[in-house]
Length: 478
Ligand SMILES: Cc1cc2nc3c(=O)[nH]c(=O)nc-3n(C[C@H](O)[C@H](O)[C@H](O)COP(=O)(O)OP(=O)(O)OC[C@H]3O[C@@H](n4cnc5c(N)ncnc54)[C@H](O)[C@@H]3O)c2cc1C
Image 1 (cartoon, helix red, strand yellow):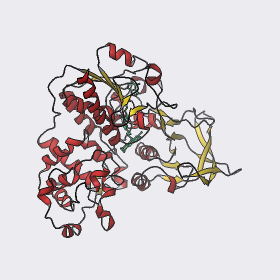
Image 2 (tube, helix red, strand yellow):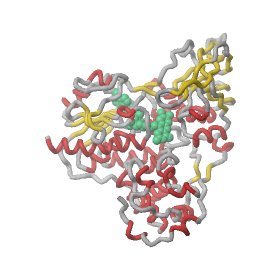
Image 3 (cartoon, protein in one colour):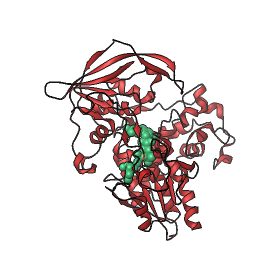
Image 4 (cartoon, helix red, strand yellow):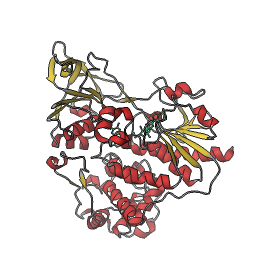
């Protein structure tokens, strides 16, 4: 529900429609490809006010609010921003989102809030994402940010996985007075915010500033602890935790099952992005080395991860970067915006191409990829036309580095090591109630990618927040 609708009932909607759009300014491709800095030039105060004034304040519930998985009160935030009430706007976002400074940067806005803005019909949508970035930055600089801590309940909760799902859950639990401890297999918190999403989309400082708020609010972090291997969920209960939230994501890269897949020079996307983008001190001890890439890099896959790999490879010194995808551009699952940026930065694309073999050179390193041409056949169950190999069309692509960006699976270890916790055949945790994240095991809740499969930061965070409401009820009912 919009919180301040009464104030803007009498606005002149028509005049607002014709106000100039504050086009999002990007750094030039030639400049940005030389570093890992932000691609977007942030809005300043004047432009933020003007852009927010373009919101025509659709009747409640506004389409942008409905399309936002957190249901942020965007129209009210726009109203506050146009009056220069930036801190209030930021605080409004914080009522419905645990990570507004992060979602504002990484959400696919064109598919969510901005995509549903009614101005799209005739004009450009209001830049909801960059405005959220602007006010949350302003708030942190001018006022600081603190997570309000509820009166101590005396209850201890374990959060397994410190990615967006765990962070969403923890923030809400802290506000209800529960003591929260994160357990994570990585040395540092953040999940894919730190160990996946490249710096040019999300600078690590943005996450670590927000993480500082969790620490100040009393959250504890135990890193390098793989639940299922180093200790089990049952061990956590024995240690005195009264409820557990599982937000371990889907960290296992899909395999291609073709010859030569393990040759030196063939990387999995997770490993490549993590070592290509993350401060070496934050990496597990045995992985503190940058990926060594050659001049010609091929990325296999068509999703957002493929775009991230192409753009990271260009930034760490590749001269030729090509994406190999087995369908056409039309069927690519990744967002257009990221693909467009990759193209501007120099990435090439070869469609209807399926790698069938990785070939080593005399030195034993990858030298080429044998591929086969594909054509599109009948639609599959999801309506996407299936790629079909064209017999005898094999050819080779010279490459000294290949990166496989083919999708992710969950690690089944938690399901296997937790009696009574039901999982689907391929390892995702079954929740008995999507709204609460309750699993088949009493006191164990789950959310994020490990329940839905690979999705978004915002959806994972929201699932954690919802689970926290149910966990609070569970703890108080005990
Ligand atoms: C390369 C890449 C780019 C992406 N870009 C975007 C984007 O731009 N925008 C967007 O919205 N989404 C993006 N996503 C998707 C988004 O990052 C995920 O949907 C989101 O991070 C899922 O959150 P999560 O908390 O469920 O899992 P994760 O972020 O994966 O966090 C899970 C955490 O659990 C830990 N863990 C795993 N197993 C165990 C265990 N057994 N014991 C203890 N800890 C464990 C992991 O170390 C990790 O810290 C991207 C994903 C990838 C891979």
